[in-house]
Length: 53
Image 1 (cartoon, one colour):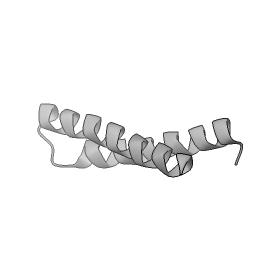
Image 2: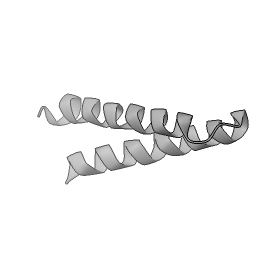
Image 3: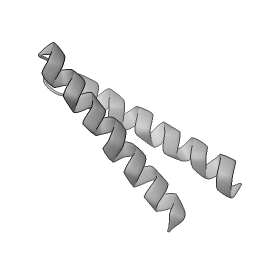
Image 4: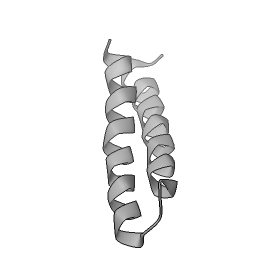
């Protein structure tokens, strides 16, 4: 359950940051997609680092 929370929260937080950047720059979803991928990558990193999976 912790692993799922890491993935989901990372995707949400970085996706939201990407949405803010999209709004600021004037693009439609480019940075939100990049942010979601970065968030998933960060979640995987946390899973490996903290849970040792």
